[in-house]
Image (cartoon, helix red, strand yellow):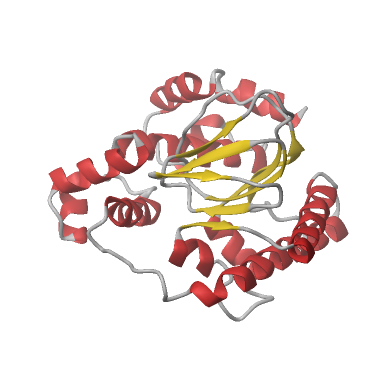
Length: 279
């Protein structure tokens, strides 16, 4: 059986790498664990004071980012993953929605007790161990470790399902609806604000304003970044496909426009990116 692409878009285990951008938004869900140092964390409109062992789960849409104290080593683990791919990975092994904490709570700060912290540390270590290993056995063990982490987070959040008020008028709710629409129509020939307005039953002005307020991006800036993210995955997953075909698969209808946009956002051409990452 061939290996399947991992839903994990990036995993930085116990990293101390310098921070290049403070606050950001992104496609995909994120798990963040703070190991040591001193750090505040901006999550939407809230600023959290973290203690070692804290975990934050995020849907990526609200602006977020750490504010570490540079006088101490800032150690953390971050995992960014594609929810669609993760759901496909977990479905054969689990008959309920293990990603409900990310979908229902959107962003949640968890303060773990000692035993819970030790378990979370062990789960992240297992992910790190199998993330870079090759072979079918390592892939299956990575899949099991990822599901186990999701189940652990589900347990930590289960008691809060349905207890936190949901305000459908909030900009973040509209931003999430826009993202759902974009994900469904990412490869459509035409992705228009008029159609979005009709499907989501809200004015274009309201949709544009809500999305910009939450993410700091215009809707079409997000669409472009999402398509480039898709193209990066396709370039590595299908090394024999031409750059032109990858661009078409990612939603770009013009090869030269795809190459120019890719270089503008990634800093290199698609072929240069493929060669660099495969090394």
